[in-house]
Length: 440
Image (cartoon, rainbow, N blue to C red; front, side, top):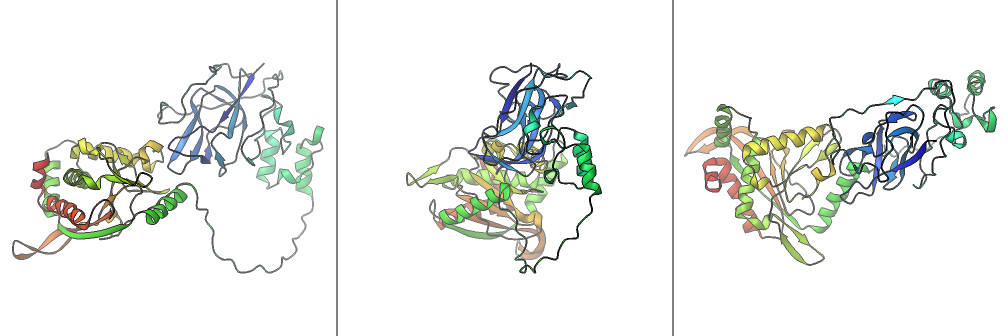
């Protein structure tokens, strides 16, 4: 007799309380292995593949794609020991213990799926799946008869996947049909009868008022960004200063470093190394304000956030302990995190805990900006595009590679003199990279 286990949406960490189902990775009737990813969800911080701690046959799914579920709501039920699931092992009482891909589960292992098919002899029925605990969950998807008959009482009484496919291919809403089978079960004949029924022309509706425009839900990543930026504006009295800098020598230094072989060093990595050097000289800018204690908290480590544009929007991955890295190590870490961001595989821990942000908006072809601070950080350096411009160099007019720098800071942690000193030090290092030798 198979035993049915209910797998609920786990606590995804970092204070997250809900997630939206983006894509199911398994269907009802599939055989899953322990720790196999079964669903991809979007939290307010990242896309996450959620692995199931049980191995067996999927007997039910809760929630359609696009549904938002709270932590603790049922995701799927798995029948352990069901016919055809000989390869799946019965889980320990607490399951595998792994919760998220990126937290102990191998990203590279492909998800394996195998569908149960009838073998002639009817399978032993599995116990009914527990009712969802989440408020107003989406309907449970039906289970093939070869696995169990637990969904005979589902909102849409359809067992046969062929009937579902016939209805789906012809645009028939199964919820609108009355089944002629036992206990109202919808049969193939019911769908075929609906296809033959005459179509009634719809009556013209009363004129509706002019639409007010497209409405886009402010949720998920976009909602989290909106809330964080709004909180930053509400709580932080920020100010911005800026300066133009001659980046010709910095670009020449980068070309010389990359000419000697080895991994290529990016401009962003050089700017990051300059930032960590400037923060060592002005540590009050690597801080946060504790409103409850009415204190400024200076932080010992620089966890450097950097803005990365993805198809899902702007995210800010964090390079841990950036102050301990040289430009080569910073380049490698920027490349790794950027690749994860573009493929939607950043873990929540990759997007939190930053203490200072480097915002390279020059990639958008603009020179300047007054960015909003990444709450609860106290400062952000913005970098515009590096372009040839007329510049007075050694007393003569010349064409030089010029960049505009903007520096936004929390005025509670320092005055303008400190902010100006930080920005000037960054500009000096860009104009004369040898200044960095003092801090290496």
